[in-house]
Amino acid sequence: DEITVLNIHSNRKSVSHGFFARIFSILDKYGIIVDLISTSEVHVSMALSNSVIERNLQPAIQELSSLGAVDILRDMAILSLVGKQMRNMVGIAGSMFQTLAKSGVNIEMISQGASEINISCVIHNSRAQVALRAIHETLLSGTKINLLQDPEIVKELKHQRMTKTLHTTMSEMSLLSLKRD
Image 1: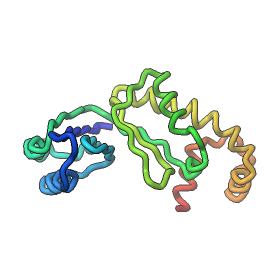
Image 2 (image 1 turned 180 degrees about the vertical axis):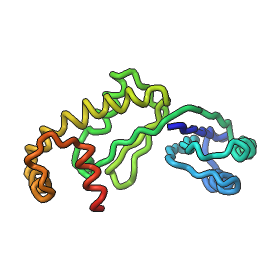
Image 3 (image 1 turned 30 degrees about the vertical axis):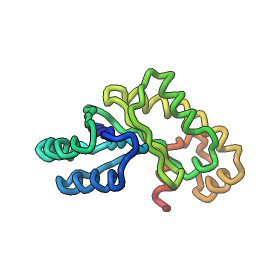
């Protein structure tokens, strides 16, 4: 929570060589670390943690303004769905976004890791608890039964001695797999 989103809309229809390099050079100059990024040819959105010091952010914004229009969204949160099984779960991102939409949660930014085992989005901080509950109830709790029918998952659960506890949550399974990786 307490994430700030920094958007930069390029001045040009086609971005000139070095656009991204200049952005990151400016951020580096002011010690601003990016948690998440989403890009297109003429737009960059970055989620910055609450550790960004305001006195560093303001001069960075002034310099970034030379590259294009800059706007800021405050009081945001990052929501991530993570699990190595996601590589094989066709439509999981769509299900995640549909669940958030049905819960009245607007998505400001989307970023997916190259490893395909996580997808993150930025939402308003005030909707974070609603979003967490909706994702857990719809995607994680409901998926548990289907996953227990998958022979590979059952094999992994037996290896972890978890088959006797069918009430083990997906988040607990995810935590165990993270500890092994």
